Length: 300
Ligand code: ATP
Image 1 (cartoon, rainbow, N blue to C red):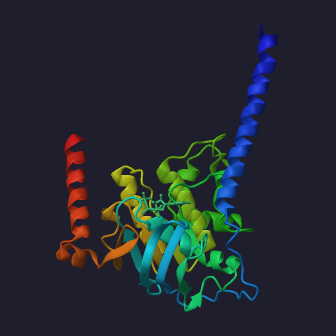
Image 2: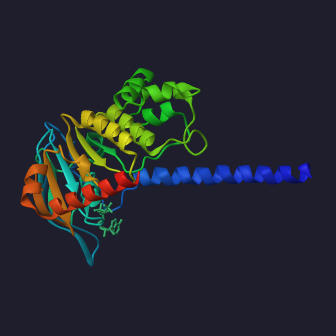
Image 3: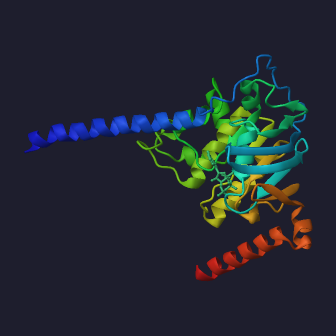
C-alpha cells in the first residue's frame, strides 16, 4: 500500500512546488506590473530630487473611460512633510498613491516632484526615489535575510542587519532557529501581519528613498503591535516626504496635513485639530471610529 501511495505523495509534492512557483510568479508580476500605456518619454530625463516636494495639480483620473475616479485633485506635500489621506472605502485613496508611483498616468493635470512632471522623467529614477510600504507584503520563499535584502540589489549583510534594527525586527530574527538564514514564506516560517510589515519597512530602509508611500493595512493588527509599528513608521518617515493612505484615524493625528477624500474629490484639508473643529466629514469619521473603539474595548 505504501508503494502505491508514495508516487501519489510525490505527485502532491510536485504539484505544490509548481503551484508555489506560479504564486511566486504572480507576486513578481504584481510587483513589476506596469500597464503598457505608461512608457518613458523619448527624451525622459533622470528625476533629480532636491527636497522631495510632491504636487498633484488638477489631477483627473479614470481606469475605464466611462467611470471617472478622481476629480480635480490639487495637493501639495512640502519636502519632508507627511500628508495623510483618509476617506470612505473606494474614495480613491490608493489610486492617488498608484498615480504618484506612475502605475498610471492622470487623464488630466499633472504630478510633479520638485517641479519635474513625473511623466517626463525616467520610470527607473522615479521608482528609485519612492519607497512603498504596501498593505500586504509579498514574501519570497527564501530566507528572511534575502527578503529584507531584496529592498536594494547588492546590499551587504551589515546593511541588512542595520535595516532590520531600524524596522525593529532584528531581535525577532535573532530568536529564530537559523537567524537571518531562516526560510520564510509559504514553504518556511509564516510571519504575522505585523512581522511582514516590518520586513517591508526594513526593505524600505535599505532603499533609503526621499519619498515614502505608506499604504496602511485595512486588517487591524492588535493594538500593541499597531502602536509599535506606528512608532517605527514615524521614525522612518521623519525627514522624508510621506503620503500615508490611512484606514484608521488614530494613525493620522500627528500628520502635518490630512486630506479627506470622498468620491474622488478632496472635500476637507487641515490638521487633526482643525478638522475636528470644522465638524464636517472628518469629525464624523473620527467620532464613529472612537465609538467603535470603545465598543471593541468593552467587548474585550
Ligand atoms: P479602500 O479604502 O477600500 O482601500 P480606496 O479609497 O483606496 O479604497 P481605490 O482603491 O483608490 O479606493 O479605488 C477607487 C475606485 O477605483 C474604486 O471604485 C475601485 O473600484 C476603482 N478601482 C480601483 N482599482 C481599479 C482598477 N485596477 N480598475 C478599475 N477600477 C479600479
